[in-house]
Image 1 (cartoon, rainbow, N blue to C red):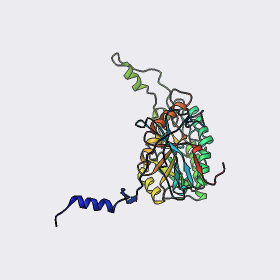
Image 2: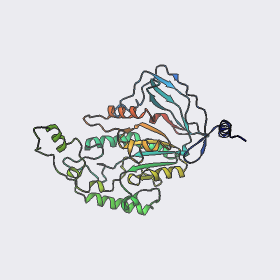
Image 3: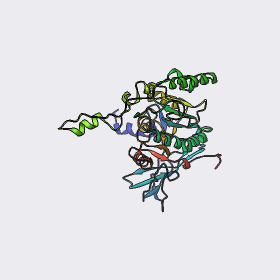
Image 4: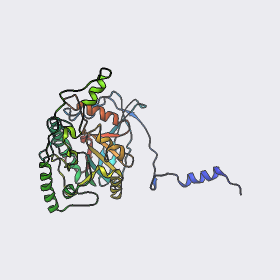
Length: 356
């Protein structure tokens, strides 16, 4: 019998019709009708909190069919993305199963919030880089992120918070991790040890330089080498500042079952934990939209490779140097992310049975 490649290919195609290979298993496929229906008189997006977010206004909007269509869906997430090729914004309703959804908050640093981890003086920097900007971000957390997370917690699979560093002995007592759940006694001891540890640190670094040495040839290069726009090193923050156990901010509620993710452990343990617990979808909140929210362990650049990720745009803030408001910075960061991510907003995430 002669080998017929075309016949073998046809048989294989028939055998695998409606299926596709993933990195772990064969999963079902469906044909998606990429039908773009123009939306007449579209409303601005992310316009609910104009103090924090400059609304997104684009003249061309389309409606497309749902991308996520879970059986027994009880979490409805309208989202949008931008396409240069479609020449506009595409809005898409999605229907998720809440029990397969995690809410993740990236880097809710407890800075200048009364726990004792404070911005060093006179020139130290951390988080949004000035105490005033840190306080504004904290108010954003209290007013927008905290209520959103609390509303989702009861039905979603997990609430997770990501923090820098490794799981040190103090935070091990304070927070649940992938491998450990502290007792109430542990938490009380951890809170006391955290207070003592943070209070013992000297939050004083060097002052700004009063003189610089500039060459006649390249004075601009010399100037910025000696006086950069952002220096978070021990020079201004004092040695050991970044080795302190950074706590979750008091501006959110941390429940005993909430999980803390440590950046230094890398992405693989987070991916494994979510998969082993049946999580397929992620609602991503946190800081900063242009930095940690993208690129740290729980950032969307990692998560969107393996999960259906929805950026909750108004539950995030970008850094905003040289401005007194984050409005335009977060607008720009979210708009750029929307090229390859779905973006939603707090008012577009609806749990069935939740109070209006």
